[in-house]
Amino acid sequence: MAQTRLDRNEQINGWAFVMPALVLLGIFMIYPILWSLWMSFQVGRGNNFSFGGLANIQRLANDALLVQALTNTIIFFIIQVPIMIVLALLFAVALNDATLRFRGLFRTILFLPCVTSLIAYSSLFKSMFSNDGIINQALMSLHLVSAPIPWLTDPFWAKVVIISAITWRWTGYNMIFYLAALQNVDKSIYEAARIDGIPGWARFWNITVPMLKPVILFTTILSTIGTLQLFDEINNITQGGPGNGTMTLSMYIYNLTFRMMPSFGYSATVSWVIVAIVAVLSIIQFMIARDRRRGA
Image (cartoon, rainbow, N blue to C red; front, side):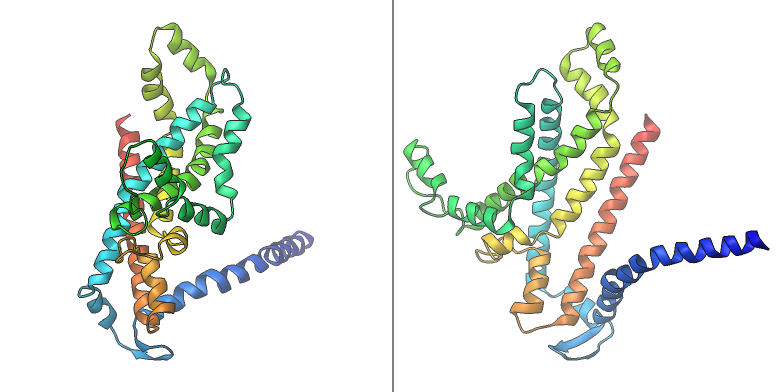
């Protein structure tokens, strides 16, 4: 009887401990998700909406701006994710070298952009890549170009600026994961490979990369989710322009909700497009990683 009362008290204490977290999770995550799902079946403008069934889904197929936003998002994903992953891995390998001087300084320099104010670094890039900014001035002074490059007024170059900004900000974040994983690898493995005469590039490809596969999968999924939800950099640097050349799905959702005539139902539907894409890509990445582990 005493044991039963003790177990009951432990259960009560346990629920009392986790209940505040569950309440906050329900209010700020589960409820918005369910509300967004319900809103995706509503049609109308502003607060004047009603149940429309699959009307918003049908609208997706005829929305040219959505197609452009989706295309831009995919372009950023295809280019951006590999760049961030490869650079982060290479930086981590370099910083893991015990013979490298000023490792702490370099590590700080690479990670510092991650904690830099969003407004500050966005303003910095906007100023650097303006028509009379430091980038154009440097290129012209070196006689590499004869006229300023339209970084922010041409869709192609605007994409280059956005990719540069994201790379500068988030490569160091991924690098920390790789660096932590590398420092936990048994150094005797590399020493044995070195004694056997295996060159450095082969050690990297056949030892380092296989041991970092779980971390590579993790950072790839994080980078995929972040890129598909890309909004902050674009909103602060190009606002989706020029000519919707840098418009992404998240930016389009923001415009549907706040800038255009409010269409909450349709914007909720577009948000579920991002959810679907992230889910599919994550499943594919997990399947690829699992097949490679089986093959190994």
